[in-house]
Image (cartoon, rainbow over all chains, first blue to last red; front, side, top):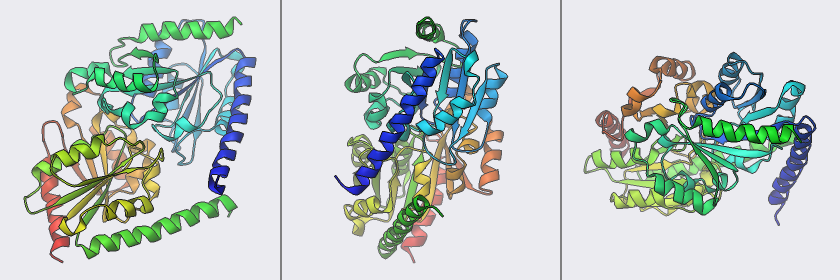
Length: 222
Length: 222
């Protein structure tokens, strides 16, 4: 094993320890936590906003927004929708790690929350390597990105628990072979739970929110 | 300056030295070279294929495809379009660097070429930090990614010489404020040369190829 590989391994090991601590914090507060990853512009923030609209009244959501630049465009939208949000500026870095998330968690009103969604930096590669301590990883894919993405970015498709296929309203205008896309996903992550949605029209959001609410309530009633 | 910053600086310095060597190779062969960056699914490969269709007969193009996985989907398409292509598999890495490009260049028939396009890994963050030794950097943005991308990914918009705004055919179906997008670009990179295109319909490609051919011929006739 070379020195550089050892260093990378050490970084990942200490990240995993802090991630485990983050998960303990979530569990202690009976909060269900999600790490949401996607390409830039796949619609992560729109998906969170649609989820807020549809969430049952009893479920209180907090959002942590990872951004490479000090812009609060996304967190401002979440706050405007009535939910607490924290922005983590990675300072140009290409992913969130467990240490950054630990800071974000501390800035949220955990006592008041049932659900935390972490919106990772828009990137299909680097975020997949860093555990944050959430209960599940979600990938938001979108129709305009093209049907070959599972084949080209296998690591992220392999490491997620839920797949959201967004912008289904654009399907009539784009050459997207759903069978080819799904065959690629199936090869990497058989039986991956998938929701097909449009954040523009709201299509498919009820099924997602109903599944999500069941997960949140299971943790809440433990 | 901390130790970790020094290490990063050393890596970038040695990358820049190798990049300078790559540029010398291009210049020695009177080849105009482009580093093309974009988000996953912005349409880099489609843009290269449309460029091949429109290129004047006398200009011979070679393509270097950067991929995080050992899939030759993109390079196969370029070869099918009649141009030599080389695939660089980064082994999960999130960007090309000058050393990888050096290997790619060696695998191309440089004596026969006037133009090389390097298709970087689909990522709006990491590729911006690594010079490759090309003459210009191009960013392919696309309408479905949303109008806030310059604000969220400023580093890459700041570091490019040409901006391609692709998938303009989808404008009627998407809430994309062109003025807001362009104001963000203008703030970061005033007077950035911009071409608005659709790789689906071919709209805007003539203006791009005409500008490109002039650059190639200027280098060729030096």
